[in-house]
Amino acid sequence: LSLFERAAALLAPDDPHRLEVECMLGKSLKDLSELPRAVALLQSVAHRSRIANDRRTELRAEVELVWPRLLDGSLSDAAAEELLDEAIALHREAMELNPKRVTSYWTLGAVCAQSQRWKEAAEAYTRGLQLDSRDHKKWREAAGLYLASGDTAAYRRACSQMLDQFAD
Image (tube, rainbow, N blue to C red):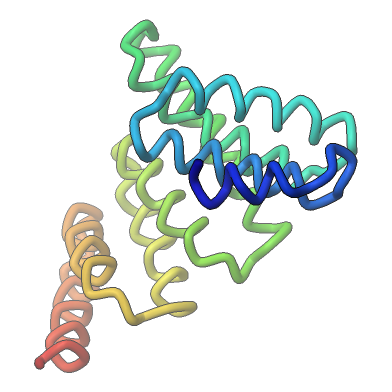
C-alpha cells in the first residue's frame, strides 16, 4: 500500500481529513497512470465532498479528473476545449480558496498552455514564481511561455534571473 492508502485506511470514514487524503491518493494513482482506479476514486471524492459541503476538496478532485478525461481520446475538439475552459474556471476558483498553493498556479499555467492561451499561462507562472522561485524547471517553463505569449522582455528577464539564481 502507498503512503496515502495507509493514511486513508487509518482514518475513520467520517474523519474530516479522509476526503483530502483520498484526493491525494487519487492524484498519486493518476500520476502513476493507474487511471481507472484514479478516476473512480476521484469521482467518489468529488461526490462525497459535495455532500459534505467541502468545496476545496471537491475542486481538487474535479481538477484532477480533467486530464484523464482529456487523455482518453473520446472527446471531440469542441468538447475538449469546453473541458479545458471548465478546468481553467475550476483552477481559478480553487486558487481563490487557497491563493498561496503554488501548485495551483503551475497547473493553471499548464491548462492554459494546452489551450494555447499563452498570456494567461505566463501570468499563472509569474504568480507561481512569486510564491516559490526555487524550481529551475518552472523558470524554464515560464520563459517558454513568455516567449510564446510574445513578451520577449519578460523572456529575457526570466532567463537572466534564472542564470543569476541557478548559476551553480
